[in-house]
Image (cartoon, rainbow, N blue to C red; front, top):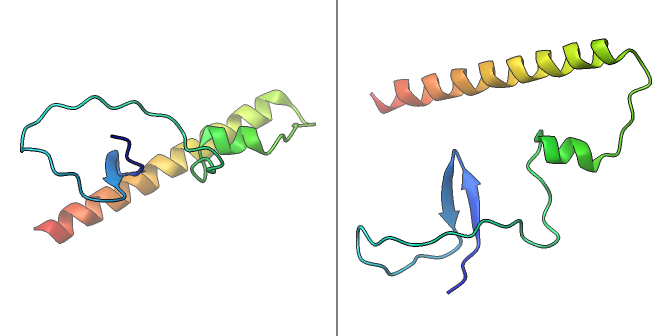
Length: 87
């Protein structure tokens, strides 16, 4: 059987329900769907843009580090908000 799924918060969100017994072990072969777009903000999405940096490489590295830090701060805020709502 082949199913398509979307990764959401590290979990596979299947396009349709699968009828398997609870606790069944399955093998998952992860491959991008042909023609699909990389996740927004991912390294794959950046690579797909084919952009070349004309400035100082150290400045570019610093900018990427800032973007990464800001992204993880946002992830932490969202996770905390989700945890607070669950209580």
